[in-house]
Image 1 (tube, rainbow, N blue to C red):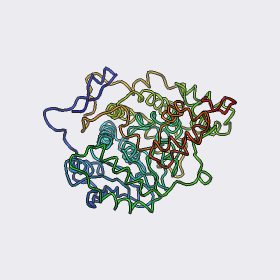
Image 2: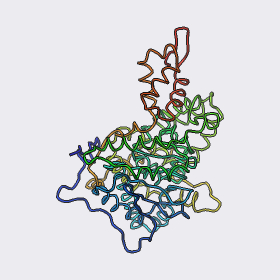
Image 3: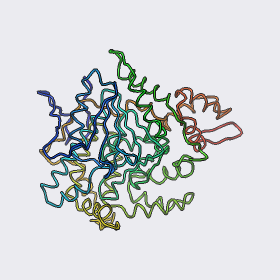
Image 4: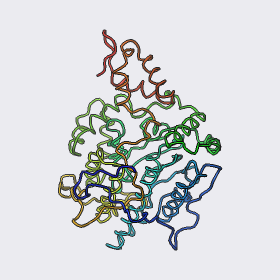
Length: 476
């Protein structure tokens, strides 16, 4: 049996408290849930989940989550279901996020409304955790807008497809919230301080940039998706094949449908070069105040730093401080602890005035207006106020999850591009780097199965992190 969650915070206990007397209760549809907001279909061995609220950019609500749960659990046990693919209806979005406008209106009804909103987040996080620990190949198609709740349905899957229409962002600090849906786990595990930068600024990644940043594992032109699905439906797994063997077969099959990446002349890597160095320099600090000071002192990327200062200054001060704390702590959380901790953080935000104010100002006001945050400044947000988001009241239990599987690092990360740390380790231990960068790039790409994007990413890392001297190439 997989190990249960190890936790480091006394309030959470020492192990993940799963029910042993009976199976956890699977959420099911309720009277009044919307019809057809999720469509399910089968194509031989592939089971398809299609979010179907295109007019609302497939924004996620409780009705949709309750429909998906029983299907995933059913397919988990079915020998006929080989692969699960999740996508969004229409060409505009996988999912633009949770239906936060409905939650904000609900919160205004008082404690009962705030509890109902908290319950929705619990339901959503349980689904994200099931996807993150699913025992069969799971593919999320990030075609179109993939934000907030859509990120939770995609970034924890072993396979995440970006297309030319992908628009990825975690915009929660703009509405007085925090980058949830497992953001505490996946953001700190991106290269350098990319995750911190994306979380605090809500910066968008479009198309192939999601692949380069480590958010997506594959990039295809949207026109190839239909043929890819048909080919995957034909795969036959041996009865005794392990999950790793099944995933490897899916990965090899996906490689057959490669449509090529846009040229670097057409689409250079966005978070690269001196900009990427500035991001790591400025966003690596332990407090928001120090990050802002670093941005003020930045000279190499002065225009970017000034724009970023203006962006961050519009965000909720409470959200900024809670988010930075969340990212630093999340580096050590397991995937299970992540969702349990985030459930408690979300509950605190449901009773905080910034969430309702932020949603109304940014999403419900026409035109959008600047929110009036409470507290209004970083100086007014005390350490005690931030601590409240991360401490559990005495006697309160943490959320029960529906899967006992757990891990502290993504077990299938090798299906995406290599991390910067992996590139550095290989380059430092490869004597050919002293003679030729092209040789070491060739060798590393071969090790990574000639995956598209590996050469481009490694070239960028070497250009940024090495110097050419009389003695050869030296790592900075």
